[in-house]
Amino acid sequence: MTRRIFRSVFLASLAVFLAGLALVVGTMYNYFSDRQAEQLRVEARLAANGVERAGLEYLETVDDGEVRLTWIAADGTVIYDSDAEAGEMENHAEREEFREALEYGFGEGERTSSTLSEKTVYYAIRLSDGSVLRTAESHYTLPALLFGIIQPLVLILVLALLLSGWLASRLSKRIVGPLNAIDLDKPLENDAYDELSPLLTRVEQQQRQISGQLEELRRRKEEFAAVTGSMSEGLILIDSQGLVMSINRSAREIFGADGVGEGSDVLAVDRSRELRELLERSASGRAECCLSRGEREYLLTASPVETGGERRGTVLLAVDVTEKQRAERLRREFTANVSHELKTPLHSIMGAAELLQDGLVKPEDRDRFLGRIRSEAARLVELVQDVINLSRLDEGEEFPREDTDMLALARDAASALENEAAARGVALTVSGTAERVNGVRQLLWEIVWNLADNAVKYSKSGGRANIDVSRTAEGRVAVTVSDNGVGIPREAQERVFERFYRVDKSHSRETGGTGLGLSIVKHAAQYHNADVRLESEPGKGTTITVTF
Image 1 (cartoon, helix red, strand yellow):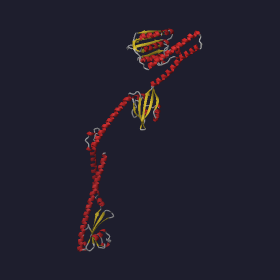
Image 2 (tube, helix red, strand yellow):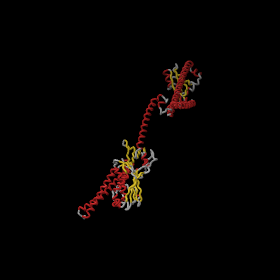
Image 3 (cartoon, helix red, strand yellow):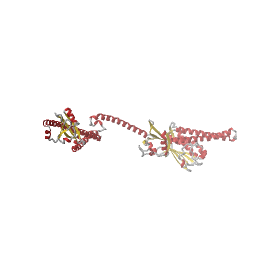
Image 4 (tube, rainbow, N blue to C red):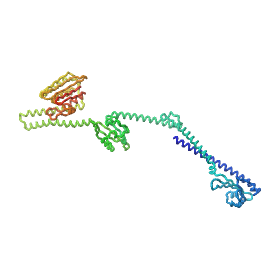
């Protein structure tokens, strides 16, 4: 802005100077030209009076080196000329000043030389005898005059340029100084030009408006960051150029992108083929894909954002579906296992019933077949009851609680398994102290009974199993069921609490049961916020401790 003001002031000053110089020179030139013309007329009249009195004698006695005198006859013939031989001069009948003098009594004329350096001014007066006396004087033309004073003019021009430059610089700085000193953060506190007051007032209003908008944007950004930061889902906002606009904490953890910030390429977040293909497919609409990271499964959804029919960016959402996938897998396995477990006793019941119905069973064998039907039906009832119990636990059903003596409960469970233990040749004992747990008695019974039932089933003939109730050093109640049976291999120990999982499926018919016992134990323990710890070694036995 300073340069523009300097240039404008400088050019204006220079233009004014040149215009003034031209005006002064022109005015002075015209003034002196008029004075010279008037002097020429006076000299012409004086010379005319002298010729009227003395004729040619007067002209010959006059010696005026500045004014040229010419006496012309009425027919245009030159009678006398002070600067040339009259006989050698051409006829002047056609000269403008001569014709005007003959007609009006006086005449004027002006002729410029071919070099344009001078002009000659003529004044003619008609005498009483009809002849004409003409005076002439040479003047410099304006270009010639300017050329003659070129050095002073150049000096004046240089001085004028320096002066104009200095004045323009000084003036531009004085004009721009107050403008540069304006504090736009506090527009109304500036001591500036009065003409700027409306502008500064408007700036103040706009600043207040902008400050309010910035504060609102900051607040919304903080709210957005707080909301997205607390999300368990990963959220990434991508602009139309494929650059990250925002990435929340969960997304950084999912993709391991701690070093990725706003403005980074989205492929810096994750360079997997699945993500690249997902973003390519999202160009034509919403797209989804599954992505594995370690032991977790994520569902990625890319949704394009459009405004006015133009794509502005993409919203990438990563949802952890590990538990959902696991639950779906367990549901399918559970359905398949229940179907299998139900069909086995049903086939046995149907086979025995058909044989009885067709009369193919000997009378002495009828009781054995009926017993099989009864035992398989009891197994079905037990399986259905276990499934119902698990379903109730899965649904989070609330059960009435009460203080339960765990030692008495252990003795009741041992008493219920007494016949089975005797049939297998296993010594089942109960030890410990009377400790009470506030919980659901039926679920506590399921825990102790299933653990004790497994201890009896998987013990060898002549083996032993024990249920112990005690209080730990931390003041917690522990129920420990141990045996010296077949044990559980290390690779199977993490899976024995899964539904229908059996370590040795070939002997499942021999041991009986539904395959849901330990799963019921795990869920019932979780319902009571209890910990389950398993210790086992193949061939040496198993110890399972539930700590309440």
